[in-house]
Length: 85
Image (cartoon, rainbow, N blue to C red):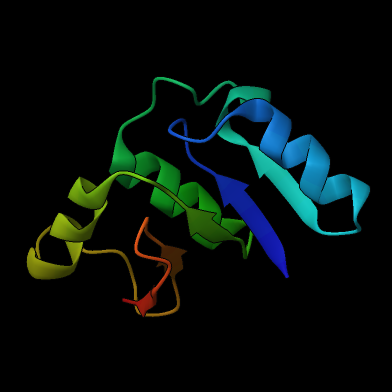
């Protein structure tokens, strides 16, 4: 599993996950710290990563067809329930 941690999570979480063998990147490590949610979700999809976020607002894209992420994208929100788009 490959993860992309959103800005709501501390950078050290990525390092800790890598330490235990989980392929993890934090948005701050790829100069996306201030990126829009849609851009982060799209980058995660392109890189085949599950986006982990504490930002419940990210779910708004699942209800907006004009800005929706393609169906193969996944993310995990603070309630820890994976969602598929």
